[in-house]
Image (cartoon, rainbow, N blue to C red; front, side, top):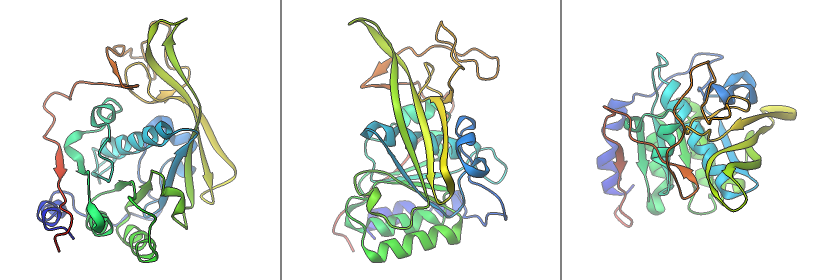
Length: 273
């Protein structure tokens, strides 16, 4: 494993100790996604594929899964740890707008050629790893990483062009029918996106499960369709939230939560044994 990544990850198990999930427990997701998933969450130790009709679909689903674990995970439900490997364009601010705690995210932007070792180290310490494999996974990685995920109860969520090359994926989340709101006849600004999220695969038998959501809503959160009132406020629980103030590069931009701990970003150096 690259020496720099080993040095930075050495403290992770102490900060985010591994878990043995109780029988029947699930890895939490955001409330809006619970109706889509059997049992209302992700199966500990499972491998989940992310995709959609376009690239941003998988990116948005990855953000939402990370936000769900960061906000609702952990032994006491007050927040869990997530690793993000090989996704240098991961939208930390957008994830924070969905509810993620940036201080509970371990980011390895460029894991290099030893990426399976980086994932293996994180699997002992976090509840979910969002992984964009940089290459078609070899047989050794396909055997080793899911086995470690099962041992430690960590969900491995796959995104990117090689995600579909990973065998044994029992659940896939797909985003379809995406429609942005806020643009008029050649004017206006993007304020939110309504989508159809579908879960399919052996862990979602039959025709699968689907739900229409705002992903993101005008305030950057993820809520069921019908939760946004005409002025752009989101009222999932009867409490209006402030409308989105800025949209950049097609995604919401949010201020960092007040008092949030510093983001943990792990550097990996290629070619160091």
